[in-house]
Image (tube, rainbow, N blue to C red):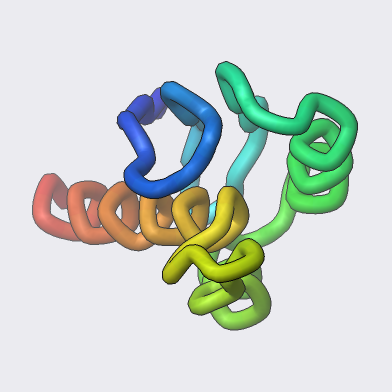
Length: 87
């Protein structure tokens, strides 16, 4: 299922991804540091969302309280909860 959301406190205006049986794919960031965000997307393609959450949750960018990767996995957490409640 496709999920899209507006992250807070980071440069991208929106983030979208597919989540199927807990596996993430087709991660797209709209705005932000294109090269770095392409790398994050490529590295996470086909991995379990739970693994990404363990590795990336809480990462900060400079003096910000969050980062693009932290916002992404917060989106994964919400999507996993939505998937659980609909099953």
